[in-house]
Image (cartoon, rainbow over the protein chains, first blue to last red):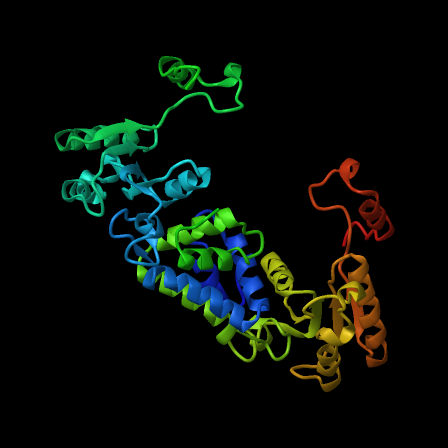
Length: 204
Length: 204
């Protein structure tokens, strides 16, 4: 599509770098902004830039944070002896939304994936070990591995577990099984198999 | 969803003001930007702002333009005696993409819609009449009304046609009919009816 203006073209090109945004949606967004008030576009423009200039990572858990230590790590109400290891920021949000977890997190920033050239040194694994060794911000008793159940996730679990063994912390992982509300008939066999093998006492 | 950071929250809120963008997509865009390089985010941020600060409207046709007179109005190759009246910028792009039209445009910026409080004075109708009366940038022989076939579009056509009568220009409108490649069986009856009433010589 030929656009009547280079400025519009540039905005469309920039917007279509966003994930899942094609040229047509980008044009729709751009024309919406053309019709908006200047202060609204300025607010958007500045909010996006602040993502790079002002947003940072918590020095302990490496989750996104406005401050040096994130609200979770600095909260008095959290159990600081439990650390849940997750792949990314979205995983922290998903677990926080359950309101079932009161421990801390450790965001790896990815999983080991040789095919993408991502090794242990590209992830926040050394900082996890350091955090346990120095008991900073608190002594760690349990590490929960909550990485995805993919080959990369399993590899990363295995790697971290081996590094953790000499440190004397308990290592656990998420229970896998048939989802609440799902019928057995439609569960995939691997999940159903794990539900049976990992069965728990009825009165727990 | 509770986000871990006010800066992230603000970016998500801003992004979800874009048309058709929900909180989930906005979060995906924001996290993509967090992972991008700062110069990329700066380029996006500045391109959006330039939509308000640098982009303008052509003084003749009111299409978006980088310059005071847009490339179409200033082109030596266009037939300046024909003006096609359209609702918005996207309509100009759609007609330009056909590569069948060599005249000029006039972008109204909307259609008359009393229910939305949009009257003739909110649209570029006076400037259309002025353009014809003053023959600036060129004398106009024909005005093509290419507004949408909605009640509002028809009302606007009717209004403009009445204003144009005293000026002695030829007023035409787009041919409506069954689309090329469509079978008659599945055409809606209004469109098929217009195709029959507006039939043309076979050898044209």
